[in-house]
Image (cartoon, rainbow, N blue to C red; front, top):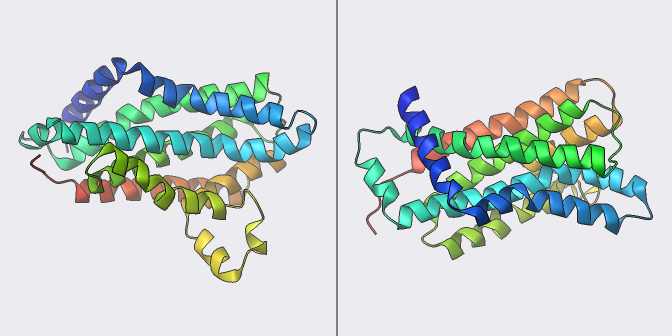
Length: 245
């Protein structure tokens, strides 16, 4: 891998995204709008917003980054751009790392906006440090980016990329502990949830919600989410292939 080639790939992706305001709006504004909507859904029960809002602060960025990254990468594949890039002396790792870096920078902005909005404008009450909340939100967004890059290799159209959301995201959403504690689920479902990265994202947010200090469980949850993101990026590089349209 080459740092210069990775940075050049990231710069090219960012230049293309600059001319796609709808994708930028989806990445940066939709999670914020969802949090605002959630806040006023629970307007009469602010404590419920505190309990649910912290979890969704990590889930919304993951979902939006998954959707935008998978579609944007697939556009490059179907337009022939990816095929031309793979014909150059450019390693697969450089290409994947460049995409991850570009979308990762947007994930930083997205996570900062959503976290700042939730804490200082919507009144989300957490016991722990806001920086830890931001860290988990960022890791979740990066995980969504990695998953989007990975599944784009298996989709032949943007419609198929969207179809991966029910298969990849929805099971995690149902089993992550958002709707009911995971230890109250059927043992089989609890075992499955223990293997899903979104479960640790929600657990990490709940650790910040309830504890003033960085706990060992929080460190474990953050490392699992980060490790899953790195693993999925590695799988994305391994499955990246030249495809003739």
